[in-house]
Image 1 (cartoon, helix red, strand yellow):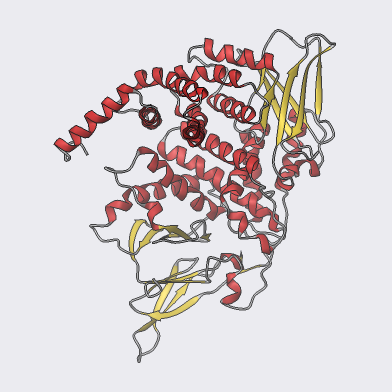
Image 2 (image 1 turned 90 degrees about the vertical axis):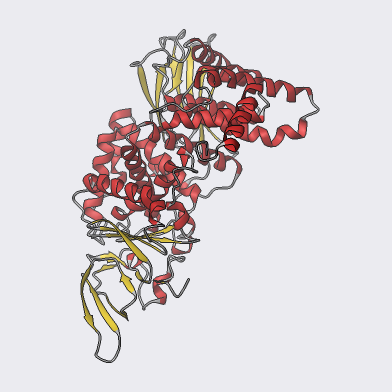
Length: 572
């Protein structure tokens, strides 16, 4: 509503500042800005900095002139002015939430968002204590079309993305709200890092998401949330990259600036960063980021290259890398496929190699950790590069042991094994009866996702996929189940078209068999002090059991409906 809210420049466009006053739109040009605004008394005004003072404009009008503190050196793209009649909720001394209707009756719907905003901001301030953000105004706008926008000191939200109803919303809704809020707050510490290359936008967005996700996990005091975000981002991005012609994350001009804030770019950037975080250790990676921020925040000169961390990778993986090899991840489309094969009847026993997911011949830099499947500590590091795209392991390598690619945090690639290794993985997962000490949650989920993708591309036998996924019948971790739930969703589109075929009955039976044990283990009723992800898994499994016409599930759903109709107040 233009009568209640005015934002300048028009923030739906990255180059909108030109419409406010003449300027050079080069990201490396930084200046301080002394902003003051004349406005009616009944209008509140906001800008990047806190208000310094207010004065009556003259004796003839009911107007004020509001003066803001001078900004630190910043890019023109960070400047914004807001004039509004919105009401405000003070979250703490330096954080305010502005919304169209923030009355006492309306404010409870924002209580969860307020708590999350406060907790995430406190966590990020402790992480980046060397940089002070003097204030943050959060503006909740109904039906706001550009929800990813954040300026220095000003964060814009679609109002619906902040609303949580304790009675009606699912537990997953809490995580969704936190996930939408956190990267915008984190971006406050990266938004002013713009320098002479537009391509660094993806890097700063990736940092914001990475630290935002970590802040959410800290706020919920649940490390499983971080695993879930990694698997979700990895799954969605790889599948989009398989079926659509996704552009590289790097951009080279202002013309491309709007597209970089698209969902696929976000996901791809964060997985690539987490992959290298794992490769060089969290401590080294985090230290590089802090140095980068402290040197670049208010500077127009590139004084520190974040990608200098290649030296640490050289040392950890014993590979001689060039800067160009590091950049393959941001310059190439699609992703690589890592292949791990064994040969019993030749001098070479195992080969680690890479191929492209498409028909082109490009090769990537891929740091890899191999792990013996039943061992917690036995790891072997390897590095595939554009000029060394296969590694041969001789007969001295223990042949009888089963080695897998160990995705420690994330890996923006598929993994394809030979049939013997797939059989060994299947046997191990099904024999360990849920006691998976050496295969992490992320690894188990990745194995399921890669196997389904390979099966759909006729690179894995259908029977092998179903044998492999049998271990899920004894699995009660929602994050591991996530790729299989997506398989259910995918199959639910195609199955109705083949109801008359014999294979339809067979697939339905396989689905029911997978759900039977977890359903008995979890039951239909939520338990006191139960893990949020356990609730999520119960909801998903019960939903699919009912869709697949599982008798017990339908009876339970009928009982709950009758209880609700009998007394809606007690049984909402």
